[in-house]
Length: 112
Length: 121
Image 1 (cartoon, chains in turn red, cyan):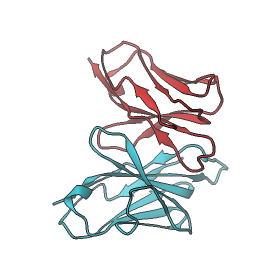
Image 2: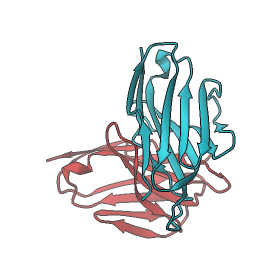
Image 3: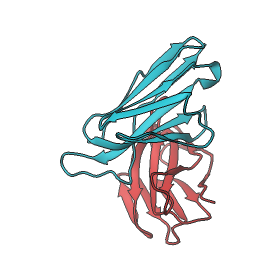
Image 4: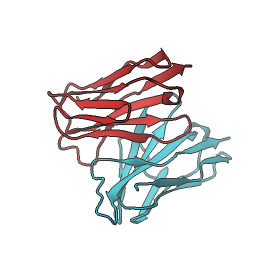
């Protein structure tokens, strides 16, 4: 139903490379958010998207709210070692009230 | 703005004891707070949602008598794990959304605390 499928599960990249991860759902979402979680810490909001087709950047990060409202991607350009962490997508389905659904996360490792 | 704190950051307790975790919104009024549980290498699992001044809404499978939630003020929510057992060991994270004094609204965005690592021996 309103599950978020996040891929890939993990990525091992070289410093300087670009990264792309995405989330898809079989049903529509009203908002998409991308969070990063460092080990032993709570997630930190990176980018919030509110409209279908919206493309937003935050430094080296770019995220888009898919036109169909069923997907979103996050790109990281020119990765650096401190980009290491787990990236979660999250979203609000319609009529869900307070409920926000989370993807399973993408674990990013950056080799110097 | 939008800072959420949690206390304690780590707690180790004996089986059968109760543990209270505090979640505070430091610079905004949190009309809604959420409590999550996270197992190693897994995503966040929503346990309950609490609105200030009313009873918490628990997700299916979460025992309300086991995980007591109080949201008595607009800046504080507490989660008490009663009669803790080793299987309750986990990373507990709160999040909050609400309004700041400058008119900032986080209705659609949740801001997370740093988490509390609970270990029950």
